[in-house]
Length: 398
Image (cartoon, rainbow, N blue to C red):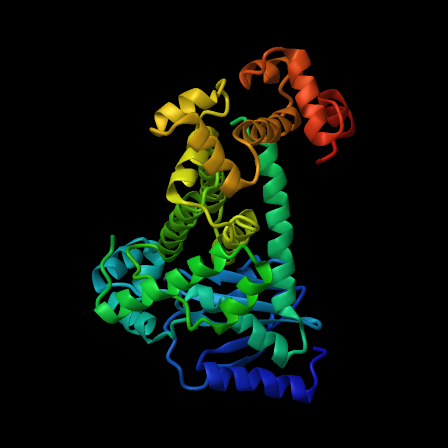
């Protein structure tokens, strides 16, 4: 073990301050080298040597009762902290968890004893894990927050590319105080996202209080996934309200819901949630500060929904009970370009995604209702500087 006396003092201080056991394991064998347990009662004997601990710097693992452990790689050892909870659970729901244990475990562990142990565990909402990483990073001189943040931004970049490639395809809280805090917390996040500013989002999250603690129904992981879906729905609603294309927003929301369904660990759920918040913030960059009336927002959404049709100004004016001249004037005043310019720009943006998805160029021109292939080529080159074929051949993003 390559830990010095100062390192051991830090590990012990974690145990004392967090009021949780802390184990030091050998990296290769997971053999327990040292542990700090004090007088905390633990009816369950944890055999870490049998656990498949990942090689990531930080990882989270679940015990048989849905209790959580944090594993940190440090020097030549693994530091395992736990157990703790990330949400609440009712006595009745805990019985379901207990009943799912193996028969051999139930012979050794009595339900009441396990329940008393479980409710005695400290509770740290999943969203507060960022703050735990900051503390651990400071204590062990590791930039864990940067590692986590960098990973999120890399994941968002991958998600954006994947979305382009795939583009062709009630529990009540126990007190009003908790409900009010939940609303306030989520509202602050939505306000930060609506600004479309990543740096503002970072600083704003630092100032927020502790995260929301969802009430557990049956599974800790499922509860966190359900709460993440609520956040995704609110993010999507926000994006639509400020004028983002409805279909694009729905694709983005559904993409993150699918990513969420793939997660089997708490850290994966948290990373998916935070990636979505960052992704939506980037999507709203340059949009949120534009002063648009509700009428123009509705017109934009109508155009976006009809982008595959041959959109005519006369029909658009009739749809919104305006004269053509009034519609042209109001649209140009708020958007900065004419209706035809906006429609053409949107069609070209849509066509670029279709090109990257492998749709034949002639088929793209037909789907987007261009007069003919020549008209599509001229329009594409006007807005991008290259032809559709050149765009496909060089695989550039204009």
